[in-house]
Image (cartoon, rainbow, N blue to C red):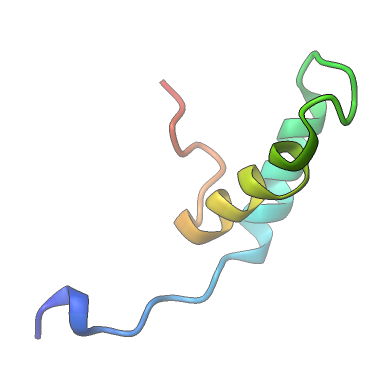
Length: 56
């Protein structure tokens, strides 16, 4: 069965929480990145199931 016909996996809550913790540990003023800081980084990590997505 082709992969695109399969149901998507649910977001990984633990990865989302870990991404939020990592994001908050970075050197920057807390809350300075607005919506990106609040939702997008944690959401992407939860969907990928890993905090290290996009880390080079």
